[in-house]
Amino acid sequence: MEAENKIARLKAKLRFTLVFAITLIVTTTGGIVTIVTAQKGISLLESKKAEYDNVFKKQAELNFQIEELFRDLNNLKTKRRNSSEHKHMQKLITKKRLLMENDIAMQADKSKYEVYKAMLEQIRVIQSSMDDLDRESKKRESNMEQLEKCRIKYQELTKNKLTKP
Image (cartoon, rainbow, N blue to C red):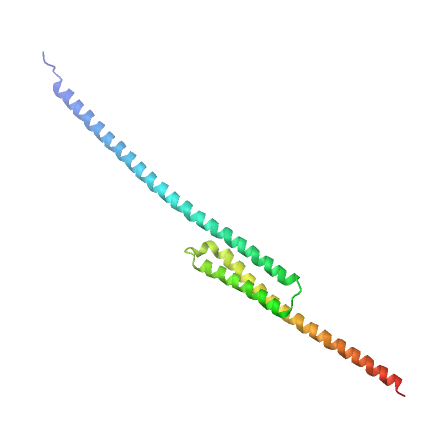
């Protein structure tokens, strides 16, 4: 007793084996591609996280330094200083500002530090304005002293003229 549909069964088995093999290859290839893509994605995320952590730390450091510069500028503005103290304080502020500018210039991605560049430029403008104001203030004080001396001298001359008949 032999089956009459032996050839049809063989063809069905071959078709099933072929479809199963193709499905298995597609599924395995899809799984491999997914795993490789996931590993690349993980390594990319880890590198980006490290990069963003470094940028965050650098920005936090710059924030602290700029806050210190603003404190120094405020002290320069509010406390009375003679010319040499004023110049010395300005030199310290300028030195800190230039160090920060050089530090930003050395960074690979300068676009993340544009705000700090603008703030440092404003600090430079503020420093030059404060120098101008200090210079004008000193001039004004000198002029006021001279004016006071002239007033006293005029009062003395007027007094002498009144006493001399």
